[in-house]
Image 1 (cartoon, rainbow over the protein chains, first blue to last red):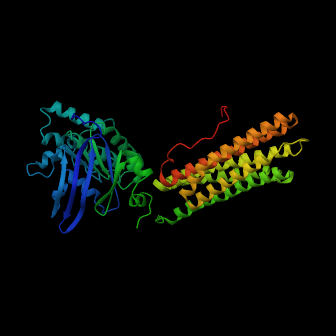
Image 2: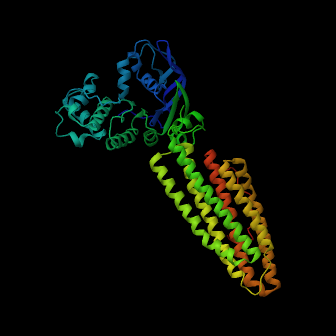
Image 3: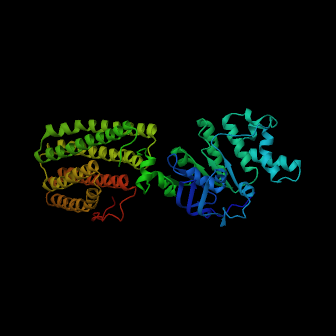
Amino acid sequence: MNMVQPQGTAKVRSRGLDVFYGEKQALFGVDLDIRAGEVTALIGPSGCGKSTFLRCINRMNDLVDGARVAGSLTLDGDDIYDRSVDVVQLRAKVGMVFQKPNPFPKSIYDNVAYGPRIHGKAADQSELDEIVMTSLEKAGLLKEVKDRLQESGTGLSGGQQQRLCIARAIAVEPEIVLMDEPCSALDPIATAKVEELIDELRENYTIVIVTHSMQQAARVSQRTAFFHLGKLIEVGDTEQIFTNPQEPLTQGYITGRFG
Amino acid sequence: MNDHTVKSYDEELTHLTSIIARMGGMAEAQLSSAVQALANRDDDLAQRVVAGDARVDELDQEVQSFAVRLLALRQPMAGDLRQIVGALNISGEIERIGDYAANLAKRCLILNHLPVTASVAGVVRLAELVRALVKDILDAYLERDLEKAIQVWGRDEEVDSMYNGVFHELIGQMTMDSGTITAATHLLFIAKNIERIGDHATNIAEALHFQILGTQPQGLRPKGDTLGVPE
């Protein structure tokens, strides 16, 4: 298990972060600290830049044609966009869970074992078994699947698939887990299970979650950042953002008075 | 602040405020009538006030259930959340003001039939001051006038000091003429209740401050002489 820094220190720090997709600028001079051991929620209307910001942290935007990043973005003080950074290693440190559960068309076991295998995290089979079991346990899925580890991951329910993806993400012992609307395809019960999981995971991981559900942001996060038209408008303790936001734009968005 | 994208939400918030407006107007009228009944020894009016309290209570119930409905169905945030929580609190405060007005009227009915009475002038003056504060704070609520609310909040000191004056005056009357003790004791309770109404007006000012700014008013309210006795 990686050591979590004292709660509250900046794990990820952006300063003057600009992102362009070709001619179009998606982020404008974002200064934002993601604190260690906390859940930070990124909220804002579609196209506001919250997912763009999220995808900078593990350099998913590298995959987009014409994407360009300026300004500084650091992880534990090291520049994420430095030439020397090995993107594969970065993504082992910064795991990601997507909107739609996307298990590999492989067995439940192999889904979770995939990362540890390619990153050489296990010396032998028994060590790999242990990683798989621990990860499924931490993802709150072990009880439901322990008798059918060899069945296909795609045969699970949507909520189980999403927790499988979370197990897969944490199997490589990341320090940060990025979640891009992880519950938008799930029913309320599956959503509650994922939210409970997020709350447990923050003891060991720094979590950044993009969500369109204000209630979800309020329920799971300690800090909330509101983006609008590519700019960070306001960031603060979640309680403050949802009870007494300081910016009129934030107030307008979270109370449903936009545009 | 702009309107909500969902128009019916705005209509519901407006409706909530309008119930409180009606309720506040009613409580204010109850207080006014009770004081008038006291000054004029008017049994009929006092009886109407006693009977009228049920209507204030009904409106309080209406606010409580409508606010709970809004909390459940709209899941309000930020300013909207504070407005609804404010409505819940303020409605409770107005309901208490109504209770005190009814109690005042009940004591009136007793006082009116006592052979010997004490001077009610001081109590009526105190009541006039408090009634003005209640009116101002209800106006401040409807106009969302923070400045006015803070003024009401600051004027509670005046109420306390006038109450102290009335208290000593009544004690004086009792000392001079033991025949006034029964009447003066009722008047003491009335004065205390009126002073309490002032406290509720202050509480509304605090709730309104929170509703508008999300914070409590800063600094301790200056407190008048507490008569040297525990509250």
